[in-house]
Image (spheres, rainbow, N blue to C red):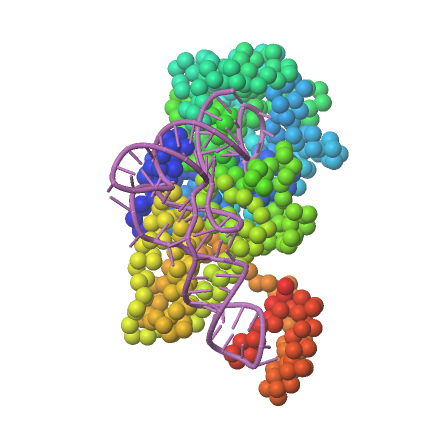
Length: 489
RNA sequence: GGUCGCGUGGCCGAGUGGCUUAGGCAACGGUCUGCAAAACCGUGUACAGCGGUUCGAAUCCGCUCGCGACCUCCA
């Protein structure tokens, strides 16, 4: 398969043809979660977006190394001297070890990702396991003259860096603007400029997570881990760096500066940012407290939710919007996605039943071509899905006899849908009744067979009673031509 | 305040100069059914407002209004 993929590069603000630095190898780094709380809907977006990219690149026969970090050192609450890290703060709150918190939420993150059918990354490095490398990079930056030490803390000298480099090129910021616009925070007197950022931070006495270094006992600055772990596993120059739009500044800008200051060259060829999920038009985030965790989504246990939404509904919902657009959460929107995905999956069931005939009256080739064209256009999944629905209509028309398809085209269509829906989009059928036991199923079937008898005898009072009573319990009965189907509500 | 982005039919959500009636959901009509549900088929003609450029703009430019993101941890 020929690669015609274009992706939008935040660095150039343009769609660019994707050309790996060392084909057939592709290096991809994505900012992962800070594991101090349950993953929420917002975390699902980059996970699914870059899972899609991972899957598609593999389909294009690239050898992809996908690195996604676990931030378990904890970011500073603020840059002030009193700053304590988030992991430590939460640990005190719950009176357990920081690493216990880390383990707990890493586990739940992994569980959620599996539910969303997001493939595990090739490497999932922990920041806490790369303290030595972070110190080494900090040392390198210091040696190259782009950092300074104050009271055991090490800061990146943005002003000096920007004399020979373009600090702000990713986010479109100018250093003069930063000078006038950076908000004043308490206790920043250590830094030469408010926009300087920590490479190493001396730990306060109450700070639990700490490591020795030549500057002080402390912890690495929060931007450093990504610079370190991306270049460690992907090389000083690699292809794709992804993450949420909210990380563009300062996090990714700082990463660019650190890597350049340490290694003398830009490390990333394509920067990609997924947009945010909003709720009532506002960003969903931990700090705003308006988030819905993935566990809540899947169970329906949140006041904002009218019902539970399955992992695949959530995945489909996210794929129905382009990754660079904001996506607004609402029950109506999720319910629409749920129905839409059912339509898609039912179409695929119909596809399995189709009998080929001599002639093909539908244009399979055009469907495939426009579908891949959409995917190649910066992963335009909403367009792709629209085309898939066009194909579903085609499938239904073949099934009803209004169109026909020959054996060869039927095989082609089937393999196309399997490839795109399951392998690339990463959707999978969900069985609603999977948690019910067989005896229960047999009992329901018994009841429905009695109903079938009653219908045959035109005893509609009985047949309707069985249907209505089952409905009340939450079992939906659907009549078919030659029998019935039922499902749990 | 600075920088950036958005405003599409009842809802979600694509599209970026001239046929896309995008697509999904909902609604309505039909087929099917003992009735219903489900399923399938069909229908609706939108682009914040004002002005400009153009033979022609939802799409380009300007202004106005509204909303949001980043500038502080965040996916």
